[in-house]
Amino acid sequence: MRRPFLGLSDFKTQRQNRRHGKRVLKLIECVPNFSEGRRQEVINSVAETIRSTPGVTLLDVESNPDHNRSVISFVGEPGPVKQAALAASAKAIELLDLNKHEGEHPRMGAVDVVPFVPLSGATIDDCIALAKDFGREFAERFHVPVFFYEEAASTPERRNLADVRAGEFEGLRDKIGRDPAKKPDFGPDKIHPTAGATAVGAREILIAYNVNLGTNDLSIAKKIAHQLRAKDGGLSYVKALGFELKERGIVQVSMNMTDYHKSQLFKAQELVELFAERYGVPVVGSEIVGLVPMDALVDAAEFYLKLENFSREQILEKRLFTPSPSSLTDMSLLRFSEEVGSKKATPGGGSVSAYMGALASGLVCMVARITLSKKEVAQESDQLQELIRKGEELRQRFLGLVVEDAESFDAVMQAFKLPKDKPDARRKTIQEATMKAAEIPLRTLESSIEVLHLAGEVAKYGATNALSDITTSISAGRAALEGAASNVLINLDMLDDKHYVDQTRSRVSELRKEALQLEQRIQEIVGSRSRKK
Image (cartoon, rainbow, N blue to C red):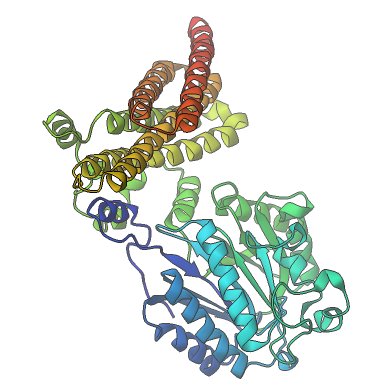
């Protein structure tokens, strides 16, 4: 049961809205897990409460009869998302009784876990606040004890969901109210007789990925899960358990990939296959529960198809749903250069500095990708993949700063146009806008230092035939840094807050010195490697 939601990560539209004074949406995904995966009429009733809540879009409903569990995904702004989650919880608590529940998956509640995930325009802090607000109201309305986990956890011991859920419904029934370590964050100090307890959290995007084995020997799935999961020395950011799929007569290695950038799907798949072969059993299939980011599948496609020089811009759907150019970062090079060369004050030096940073980041990624395509760099593969990931993050950040710098300067100009009949209010607005106009290029400055660090790393083991591109990246990074620094300093001259001005000037000076040292060090590495060619 799926309903597509298009344009979910359309950050360009968000930037356009900011530029035109429109309210920016904070989109948050909620992925509650309910302890029912067999009775379709019950699952449909819970899902319908979400579908009928104004302001949210139901994305996906996944049910598994062996796990006896359903995972529902929906998205919206914080208020509607909270209301939909409460409505679905009410229906689940009404219809489910954990005393009659059996399934392979660990569970402690009818509404077992309710995570909030930041998407477009939202941060993890927004999700933590929403989790706390939801958890409080949920506990008060339904008299179900609530435990916060992951980023919303009240103590380090409660970050890991498995630790929170240890003992499950039956074990927690005896411990809550007796064991101080099991005191809920909200709600009664006793378990609900039919609905159990609920974990509420905030986290980044998680991929639920399962691999099925052609055997009914559950011990093999458990052994592979043990060898695979991070806490037992396996892949970082992977949680894994072994389950029996009784209806199919096979077993499953069930995984949660908590950072798919650092531990990709293909790595998990390859390791499961390696261990399965050792135990003499075949891998018969795999599945993704719920939704998955496109980048995670592209990573797997690049690995298995051995794609060369592949770009995500080649993905048809990415092109189809890209909005028509209206923001600075949507423009062609020709149009952007024309905008810079016009008599308008924006885009100006700050935006150009940020764009230079984006180009510097792009060159770092290019050199790393060229190097990865060579067979003799197997040892440095992980480092190069990490450089690409960080470089792409920086490139996107710089592109955002191109727009933000222009917006911040426009805000200063608007402040100066305010009526002069209220001088104190006018001056306060000018000061606030000018401080923001200093902070944006300061972020460009700090990001430029990060680019130079990445350039230094790729200079160590980047392909020797791409050393000139590293030199160009350093030059672009330095241009971004110096341009941003000059924009910070010119805005500081207009500020009254002497402490802030002195502190920021000192920060700019420190970053400039660090940049000089980095540039010299990288040039030495490049020079040394060039002489050995």
